[in-house]
Amino acid sequence: MPTTLTLKGQVTIPKHIRDALGLMPGAQLDFAVNSLGEVILQKAAGNTASSKDRFELARGKAQIKWKTKDLMKLLRSPD
Image (cartoon, rainbow, N blue to C red; front, side):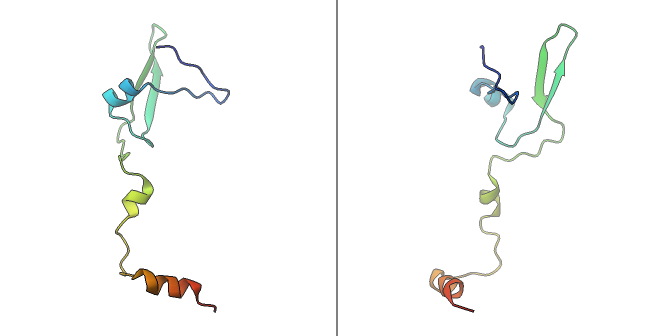
């Protein structure tokens, strides 16, 4: 499957390959070239990328339970 290299040296990894490797946004990859000149792509060792983005990971972590009206009052009060 041909792809085009951008000016920044970027390419899109086809979906079927991302799916086969279980790659999610933020995943770290290792590239290598074998003796035949073929590129080898694999997940980096110790890859801890999550399927959740940083906002999803932070959701529900607050220790204070704010009511929306109280939070808005705090944010809008002139000090």
